Image 1 (cartoon, helix red, strand yellow):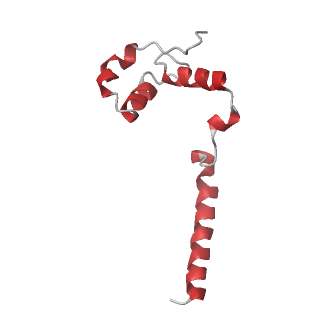
Image 2 (cartoon, rainbow, N blue to C red):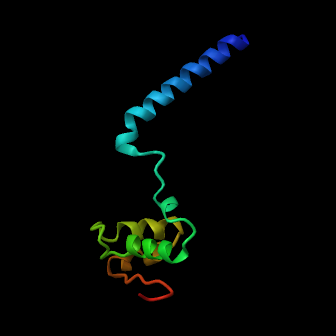
Image 3 (cartoon, rainbow, N blue to C red):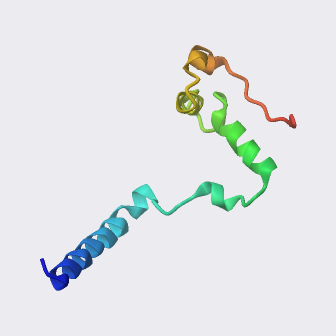
Length: 93
């Protein structure tokens, strides 16, 4: 394969990627980063994590976020308690 063919192939793939991003961005928002909106504010980030991990949070998803968190950090032994968990921050608000 010559360099020209390689570059054309890369160009076509990049074009396809751009089109796919444009098509799926309204549904998937791949460039969106909610955490980035808060900046380096530890208290706000703590409040956000508390809200997401709380089974009674306004997200109305029950304990699913907490369960995923526990699984990610290999703390499965706490999974049976997830739906009854009370999540708080160091500075209780």
